Length: 270
Image (cartoon, rainbow, N blue to C red; front, top):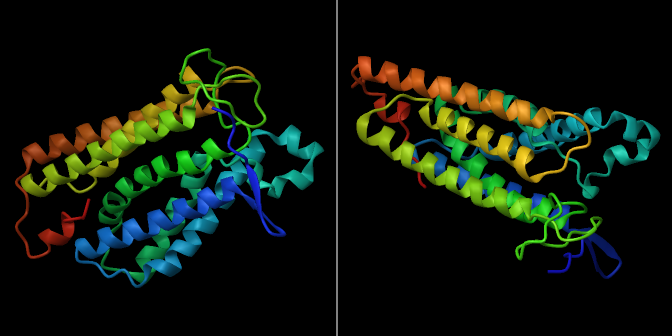
C-alpha cells in the first residue's frame, strides 16, 4: 500500500492529516467521557472547560518531552519545536501533564467526583482514544512506520524507505484489547462491589506492558535502551502491584453498603 498523503489542500488551505487525526481523537475522547459521566450519575456540563485545559496540557507535555529527548536536533533547528504537524508527540509526556491538570480541574469544577472514581471513568476512555489516535495520528504522518519488513502486511510510510511494520495499526489493536479488558473489569467491580481504582490499575499495567513490547519488538532505535521501554516496564510494575494490592484488600474486607456506594463504584456506559 502506498503512503497516505500527509498534507492535502482545500483551496488555499493546507491541511495536515496528522493534526486532523488528533482533533478527531480529542473529540471522540470528550464525547465518550461525557457519556460515561452521565451514565454514572455525574453532571457533564463542566467537562468542556476542563477538556480544553487537558488538550492544551497534553499537547504541551507531549511536545516538551519529545523536544527534550531530541534536544540536539531541535537546538540546531529551533523553528521545528512548534511543528507538531511533522509528528513528535511523546505519549508519556502528554499523560504526565494532561492527567494532573485534568484531575485538578475536575476537582474544582465537580467536587463530588472523587479522584479515584474519576480515574476509573477516564482510564477506558484514554485507552480507547489511544486506539483511535494511533490510526488517525502516526498512521497518517511522516515516518509513522516501524522496522523494515518484507511481510505481506508491510506498508509504505511518507519519509521512510521500503515496507515498514504498520506499528500504529498494531497499537490500535492492542489498545482495543486493553479497552475490552478494562470494561470487563469494570463490570466485575460493579457486580461484586470491587475496589475503586482497580480499573485504572489494570489499564495502566497492560498499557505499560504493551508500550514496552511495541518499542522492543517493532520500532527502530538510534542508541541503547529506549527510555520508553523502561517507562513502559515501570508502568507495568506499578499497575501489577496496585492490582494485586487492591484485590488482596478486597478479599479481606466486605464492601460497604452506605448510601454513597453507587458513587464509589460507578456504573459507566461502555
